[in-house]
Length: 349
Ligand SMILES: *Cc1c(COP(=O)(O)O)cnc(C)c1O
Image 1 (tube, rainbow, N blue to C red):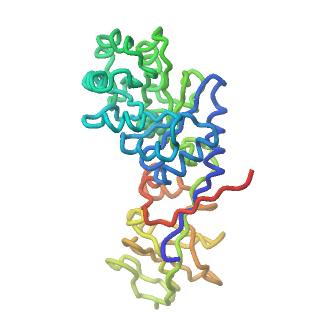
Image 2 (cartoon, rainbow, N blue to C red; image 1 turned 180 degrees about the horizontal axis):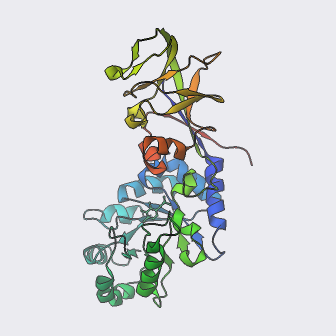
Image 3 (tube, rainbow, N blue to C red; image 1 turned 180 degrees about the vertical axis):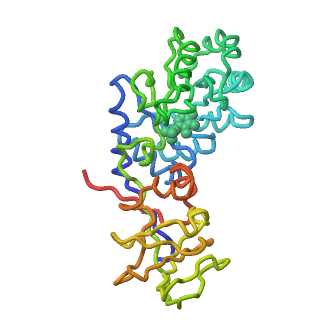
């Protein structure tokens, strides 16, 4: 096998959805956020799996992503577009039966003019200042927008991964002030908000990262494993250097394994000289720079060099790796390259 293999555990994905679903009351719907190609895993496999687990609504970033999700799901499940109704998207929204989450008066006007009667939701800004209508804008527009029958009002929390952050309660209060009495279904929480408790759940939750096994959902089952095949091993003498810019010098005679997988696979270059790969239960340090397609690893201490070394697995979770790289699990996942050999596994239930 010439490319690194990315094993995606669909049983764990479904279990994570069910676990997040159980965290809210019975009347609360749990959607699945599948933007960015299902957080890098492959959107079509992800939506099919989540639909089998019971998800009836999905969120994507753009209408084009919604088209792929619709192809995999067929008619029925709702697909919401977070960027709303962008110019030129009317045909896609209509033909793929997408539900745009409208973000501004411009988008609302565009939607009601080009697709009158077509389902839509509204996104409100409660403090994150990224997407959605501001309180004053909403107050002015609400009477005619509510008349047009939005099927969801939503907002997004900026700091939900930190339960003690005062922004959470402030945004919650703003959301109530903007939506109480509208009698329209409401949604405020992604993974982090679900964990803040029932006051944040409203009618629908929108977990993403927790489904894929990432923090802040500490109880998540791991979904992703990444294993890099060993291409060759070589002995280097004390004083020889390894890799680009000769950043690592062998302190003693060493055995170096060159494994397939580099920054073009999403193994970001800042892991150079810092990451650890695992030979079963034995840690092996990365030495030298991560290059485009390869990484060099010190395996001097191994009695036997296996066919592949693990970068994400039992001993190093997605979030551990992200921490070493100075980033978050979301970024590691969504950078995983298309060329990786994605193997979907599903254990019989
Ligand atoms: C990405 C996103 C989500 C999912 O967030 P997670 O932290 O991955 O659970 C939910 N809602 C909106 C608006 C988003 O942009």
